[in-house]
Amino acid sequence: MKKLLASTALVGALIASGSSFAETKFGGNVENTWTSEKTQTTAVAADSYDSIGTDIEITVDHTVDLSNGWKGKVAMAIDESAATDISVSRSYAQVSNDTLTLQIGTEGIGGAEIYPIPTVADISSDIPGAGSTQEYIASLNNTHTIAAAVKVPFGTFEALYAPQASAGKAINDSDAQVPADAAGAPDGTGLEVAYKFSAMDGALTGGVGANKKKSNSVDNHDDASEKAASLQYNFGAVKVGAGRLLSKAGANAASSTTDREVTIDSFGLTLAASDDLSVGVQYKEASSAEWGSDEETTTLQAAYNFGGIGFSLSYVQVDNDGGTAGTDNEVYVFRTKTSF
Image (cartoon, rainbow, N blue to C red; front, side):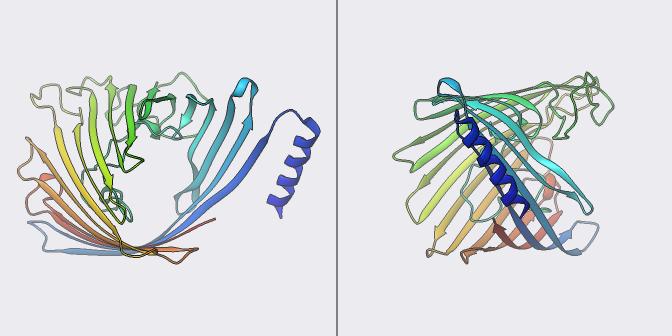
């Protein structure tokens, strides 16, 4: 009832002004997840854990026509950050025309957060316990940035700048204090660029991206940086994709002579078995000169759409988690999701 009253008041204001069009949309989703995880190391035979969790997100998008062909948009989403708390998961303000979008805030413009492979459920690194590495860049869009997106031939070029590369999404008034990193040293700036393209009537898609997060800590051997490239092809019922990520943590002691760079290669294939049933497989291999073994992750998934609610089942096998030989994980995830 409250939503109906709010919409009625908004429409009344628009009719009275008669000078521009505006629209406010409310939405969200509810996810329920059962996870079963088994971990094994060379010192511990096996530990098993089971849990059920809920993720609730509520979204608000407000768009308005501006002068000279420009449009404005303000968006936000809130979800639970702990069992008894909620937080803002994204918030941004944009102005755009047919070619250019300018933004301040978090998310919205995705930057170099490009999922390299097709999936029918979560990509493996978004599943808790499914390995210590991820397939895609840890984008600056997860912190407060100034961003721009420009339409270019075959795609979009995007750039993000963060005054505080690890500030997170906390909602508070700006101030001159720079948050400290884990070592208690001031955090530095961040810069990110990405090019996303589409060709062959959308059958061929991909992207390249890179970012650098400056560290002001004398304890760090170098700044953190990531570079990634990926390519996907849609055959119709079958989709395939592959990507490579080079990730340098930059968290070495000043006396270290290594750069902590990890190479992550990922491959994925999905099949639409019917209008409602899809299956998929993912494979990820991560290697580093500082590791004794390569981390290998295999994921098998199935998803079914009942119309108003979706179900998915994932099985993940991780060998040599974090490059440690004999540290293996096995994870089962059953998830339901309803959007409104």
